[in-house]
Length: 154
Image (cartoon, rainbow, N blue to C red; front, side):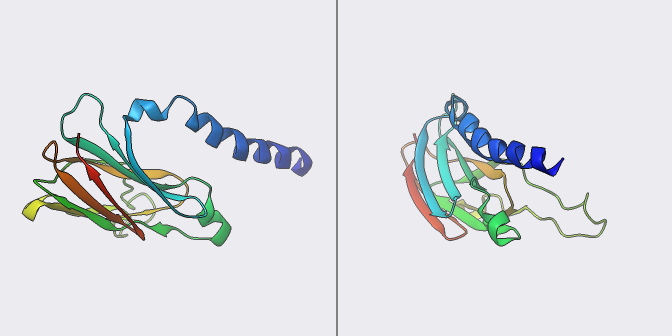
C-alpha cells in the first residue's frame, strides 16, 4: 500500500496546483498585484468582477511551505486607504470545531472604522482572505504577514 500511496501523493502535489492555475483564477477577477513571500507563501489582490470598488485580498501557502517547516503561517495584517471597509471574509476558520474554548484562529479585528480594516489570520495549506470595499480610483495599501502591496482600486 505505501508504494502505491507515494506515487499518488506525488502526482497530486503536481496536478492540483496546475489544475488550480488553469481557468479558475479568472473567475476571481483581474489580478491587480501579487507578492510571493518565500517558498510559496503568496499575497494577491484581485478586482471583484461586476463590483465597482471591491477587491479580494487573499493569502495562502500554495507550495505547502508550512508543511515543509511545520505549523501555520501568520497573515495578520491590515488594509488602509480611502473609505476602506469590510464586505466579507473568505475561508476564515473559527477554531470552535477544534476545541470548545479555543480562540478564533482567524478574526476581523477592525472592520472599517477610521478607513481601515485589520485582521488576525493564519493558514496552513489553503487560501484565506477578505473582500474589501474602497472608493473606485483610490489607492489601498495592504500589509499581511511579511508582505506589503499597494493597488489602485478599479
